[in-house]
Image (cartoon, rainbow over all chains, first blue to last red; front, top):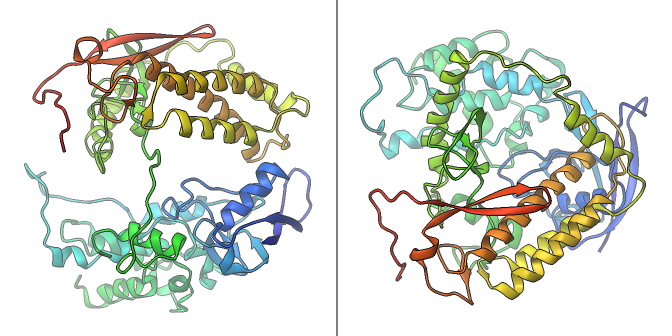
Length: 232
Length: 259
């Protein structure tokens, strides 16, 4: 099928403001949107700029707005989006070029919740063991690929630059509810601040946006509840 | 099935429209891990030659490194060793190194080599399309240098890679800008891919035996007398020189895979 991609372009070296440009390419219904972008870049306009790496929904590089929704370009097939597709950069972050946004604040939020195992006891001689039931408590939040689809779909993050955002809370959840980790209290203290979980208004955009089907809002609510009940 | 193979079931549903609990999932071979790479010692320090001479302060990590724990075939999930064992060891040895090392004298213009390389690519007049060269490289490596190989196919591949290197010298980019120029980075990476492809073909052509993921239809048996060895490739001008580095056998003897 012949498809028209309407892509929001911005080159800071040339453009005063972003402009939409249209490209027409041949695509199969089973092609990914990323394949169509690659066709444009490799055979029509090499200046078209976007991030991509693994091309199958694992690395989280190619999150963008496709027909108004945050999607991974490599996880949406052309058959799902029709023959006229609008592609824009993620909202809420400044645009570096075309579909590439500045992710510094996103990763600063992620780092702020200490996304690594914290222990105070002496290292054991063998593995730190865990029951399947204990593992299940945070199974869902291990699936995060840090693509920023959730954080940039959240209306709070569009206006409040302090808010750590859903992705950071998801990754805090992954450790707070891990029976092997001893940093839960530290992380909860961080998320109890003005920039933390209480900024969430339960809009559910994050859950809709997640390409890994993580129940993001539920994870945020579990962190809020852990703060209120002091149990986790 | 969803719990044990979450990614595989998701791929089948997303990309093929196949429900893996009910229908067979089509499969095909792919290159999903680079065995071999920059030779390192067990602390991820780069070694320069078959004698194991360490290059002080230079490290290679993960899939670009070759600590050589996998032998001739890295089996599923074993790249976690790169992460869990060697990531930790490598990190520790780098920390140790930076604590005791002093800053070396810098050459006059340390960035000159990279700047000239970039400037040269940007200045080329409109020529070959890097994407077309990359497609040809991918096709010939998949067709002639995949798991099942032989001298005829690989000799053709080597000739094609040399042609592609010539074409690459005339390849140009459309994006001449200085901000997030992925047209440029993709073109530069293509040059390194050609280097690597040539090293892979030269190593595989010389190794006249079958071992692990390297299966030669013209030499179907393993040949420990001649090839129980790592292949080390060194560039000398325009030529690649192949030397053998002995394999240290500890607990596990190489054995034929009979299943």
